[in-house]
Length: 580
Image (cartoon, rainbow, N blue to C red):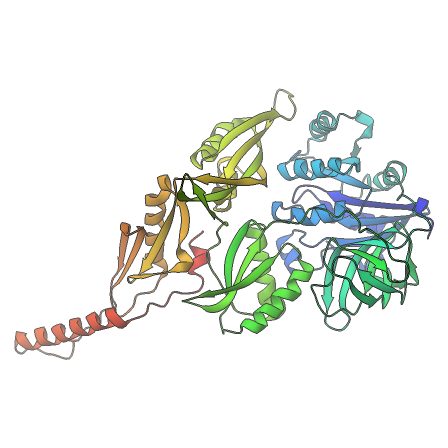
């Protein structure tokens, strides 16, 4: 087992829903890693959320045996928001299986991840999956791969994760083409942490790849980024459940239980070494992830300590989540959290509510703007991203219209392959991130009948004198959580949209409520929520008209007083609903 020439470390990369988890299931069956009686669909997707949504969120490693070789697989997510999980797993392997759906062809996320793999000099095993589907076009998709990778026809494997066809061939190809880990004998221990989980009984459990030396049970270890020392209480491999071993040799992928209770000690990307024979330099990790979307998060019951504890524990499992203390006039103390995208935000919110029994208030998501000086004047700068959209030719016009309407700049158009029938293009745009996070993906899917796919990456911050602050006032009071930076050309429309939506979402009060959108001191949009009206004259039967007028006048004065003193209750889900 310790012979590193007999080890192969690989990942599976693909666009969302191209069959990664199903193919991983077939591999577990083929290698008899899991007893057929215990086999279930999406075995490596451990979270209930993953099974419900049918997507992989957390990467899950597993060790298999095939033809006398040890195969370490890391199954990775395919959604654009979880690209950081993919980059982590790529840093721990020597090769990847590139999976492409025979009915859909190459998609945007496939291209992005493939480029990451090529940058890291990983060996690519190209596979056309789902060939059993009635609408599959394996030959067309194979041609796209041949054109993209500049490879020969015979290098492509045709497979079906559902039926198991081609799975043995994939396993054989992994052994013959993906190189064994480089041997570094006699070197001090260097192991990279590519994921961590928190166990309430055993503390922090780090998922590691041993690059140099070996890690023995009960060995004294040190985390190199912060010099935290501890003991390896248990080491082992994934089969797919954690299985203890006496040691982890060079090239192996496994786990180490440290007993560390401080969740910030075991950072993803950090290097573990031994205390007695210490490495001089840490391994070169991968890039730190930068949050793209921010939102305020508050506990509905005001338990800020419980919320901080939950966020710290979740951050250990999700290194891309960032948070810092925040306060709000409306909700009190809480946290400003950074996410990779809207799906990532939804997943984090749902996990906090499910796993820690919290009831949360989440404010409207936004991007981080910066204030800069431009010729002595204060202006805002905003994050811009490079967006790659893969789209069939017949939808090119509609997709371009959407991108241009959102201040997009077309950089390049490349055609994947030309077979005369289903020509598809890759459009490269530069767009403000704020325009991408608000239903851009939904609009894209809508105008392309679901065929378009997209991926984006951060480029830089760009200053723009036309970026202005849009304030929202409810009953004359400015609501900080609803304020946003918008482009002046969209301010009027955005202000009208928000006030109209708020009119629908905020329940009627006992007094009239004005809703206003303002730039500086100028009101640019206004709506009114009429007061709930109680019929104060109901108990009067006839009689003098002046008695009715007296009661109505009294009611009017009461409402006026309420309007001055009254506080409007804004339901906590208003902020998320405003985006939809």
